Image 1 (tube, rainbow, N blue to C red):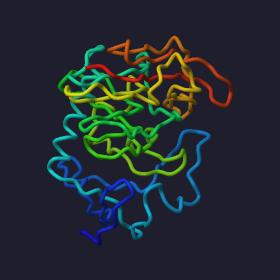
Image 2: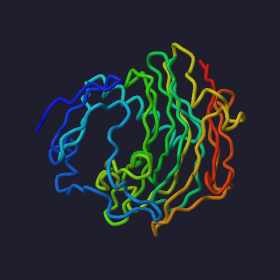
Image 3: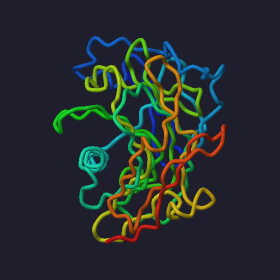
Length: 300
């Protein structure tokens, strides 16, 4: 199964190259009869797949052999730390402006509708001064109508975390739903498919999500003040200083990209004196709808 150890990235992550048909994801019981999809069967109209893959991603100085995938090595503590992030993410989605201890957010949430994907470009920042046990991220989150014990949601975006990665380097993704298979695809830089979330694992997102959130989230231990969100500047300072989302768009049932009127977004921030989010507004035909968010932190 294991072909070779790949390398340490500049961020300190260790990866292995694994046969794509024997990757650990297929150990999940719901994927016993799943057929691997190598590329999207459809794209939102106006988008095209890259003709060739990039030479390398930032931080990687090598590539895996054809027919294999990158799998990051994880330790037991990594799994425990991931559970902390999952708990905060769950509270953010379902808890009506109440967050778990140490977790805070500032975001826009759409009104209920049928969403088959979401798209945006995000400004992201290196945060070298995070303390141990802290995380600061921005993300696009899709989720459906479901009881608390049956929540299905997908979150992708940038994250700087000393909880999991112990690094100040951030990472980025975008995604949509494949209209034929129902799998939720993740792409890099608009055109390069990285992989997908199988629909078998997300029954409450079949065939669509009902809500979308975009914005920032932080997590911190109670021993130190909460970390910066975004660039560390509040949303009222605008795109020149605050972190932002631009080209905010969504995918409909016909695989068309569309925009929402600003009145279709609800701002949510649990400690508004520390983290804030501005209303979405139309900038121009290139950037379309944009909004700023963030804050310096310091809550304890």
